[in-house]
Image (cartoon, rainbow, N blue to C red; front, side, top):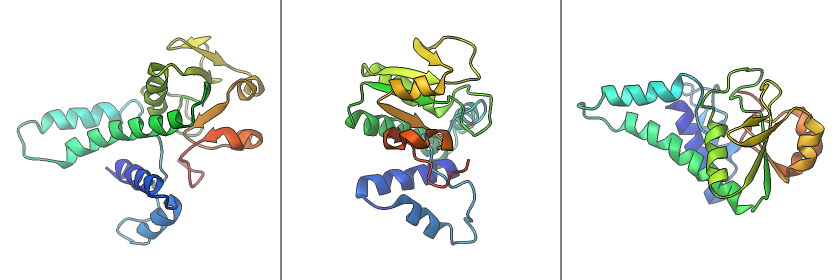
Amino acid sequence: MRVSFFNELDSYALVAGLETKNIIEGVCLDERIGDYYNNPSFGYGGYCLPKDTKQLLANYANIPQNLIQAIVTSNTTRKDFIAEMILEKKPKIVGIYRLVMKTDAANFRTSAVQGIMKRLKAKGIEIIIYEPNLPAQTFFNSAVLTDLEDFKARADMIIANRYVKELENVKHIVFTRDLFGRD
C-alpha cells in the first residue's frame, strides 16, 4: 500500500508538472507517515510482494473491500504509465540497467522493470539489458550485456529503477524515478 501510494503521488506530480520530491517530503513531515520507504519506483515487484498481494486479494473475494484491489490495480497502472512515458520519448534502443529491484540484490524474479520491458517490447522497442548477475546471453529474447561501457554506448535511453554513480556519464539519457538515491 505504501509503495503504491508514493508511486501514485509521483504519477500525479509528473502529469501536473510538479516536483515529486517536494510533495513527498511534505507528506512525510507527518510523523504518522515518516520519512522511510518513500522513494518512487517503476512499481512493486520481487518474489513475494506481487504474489502475496494477489493472494490477499483472492482471500478477500467474498469480503467487502476496495483497498486490496486498488493496490493490485495501482501496480499495473504504474507500469503502464511508466512505459507510456518512455514511449513518448520515442527511443529506438532502450537499455535496462539491472533487472534487480533493490541495490545490491541478486534476485530479479518478477521485478517491476520486467513489466516495463515487456510493455516496451510489445510496442516494437529494442531492449538491451545490463545485468552482470545473469549468466545467460539473452533474457526474454533481449541481449544481456556484461560490459557496462558497451551497454551505455548502444542504448539511446537507459531506464534504471535505482540511479547509481556508474551512470553519471550518461545521465542525460537515464530515465529513473529514484528521487532519494535509496531503496
